[in-house]
Length: 312
Ligand code: NCD
Image (cartoon, rainbow, N blue to C red; front, side):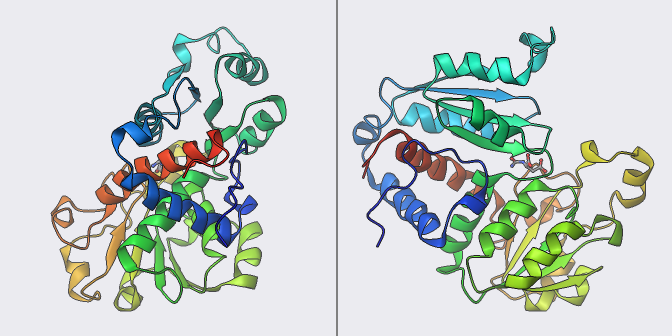
C-alpha cells in the first residue's frame, strides 16, 4: 500500500493536497530515515542544494530544514532577513523566486501573504515547500504535529484533541485541522470568542469532523488526550488594541494537570510566550520539545522523498 513515493519532485503547498496514505507514507519514511547510518543518510541529498527565503522570522522551521539538508549530505543557501537582500531594494517575490530557482533543487518559502506559496510554485521549476503562508497554512508543521501524535499515542484515530489559543490567525491550526480530517477524531476548539476559527473554514471542518467549541479550557480538560496550544499571533492583528484585549487570556500551568488525564500530551508548535508555564516543561505531559526534534526527522524524510524517486 505504501510503496509509491508521491512526493518525488512535488510541491508541498497545502496539506490538503495529500491523502491519509500519503501522510502515512511520510510517517513510515520518517521512521525509516532514523534507522539509517549517517553515511547512508548523507547519500540522499548529496550534491543538491536547498534554497530558502524567509520573509517572516523563523527559528525551528529554517534551522530544522537546514539541519535536515546537511544530514542528507546537501547544502543550503538563502535569505532569512529580507533587509539584507534585494527585497529591501524593492525586488518582487516573483523575481526573487525566479533567481533562487536557478541556484537550488528545492525551495522553502515563508511569506506573510496567504497564497504566496501557491503563486511561487507556479513560477518555480523546482519544488516549493510552504514554510508558512500568512494565516493560511503551514503544512510541514502539521505533518510533524501528526507524526508526533502518532509516535506518542501509537495512533491518531479515536483520540480527543483540544486546540487552544489563536484559532483565527494561527496557520498551524488550519493545517493541523486539514490533516486531522483524514482521521476519526473528536476535536475541541478552545479560544476567546474574538479568536475563534474563521467562519469560512468551520463549515468545511464540521462537515467531516466532530467539532465542539469552548471559551474556557476548564470545561473540557478532563476529556483530552492531546492539548495543542498556540501563541496569539500579535503580528497578524489589524488593530493592536484588539491584541491587548486578548493578550494573556489563557495560560497552561500545573493546576490544569490536576483535572487532566494522566497521559495528556501537551503540544505547541513554538515559539511559546506566556501561554505555557515553564513549570510544565519538566512534566511528562510536555512534549513540545520532542515535537520540535521530530520536526528535523520528518523534514529530512520529506526532503529525501522530494529529491529521490525511491530513497528508502
Ligand atoms: C509557527 C508559525 O510560524 O506559524 N511557528 C513555527 O513554525 N513553529 C507558530 C507561531 O509562530 O506561533
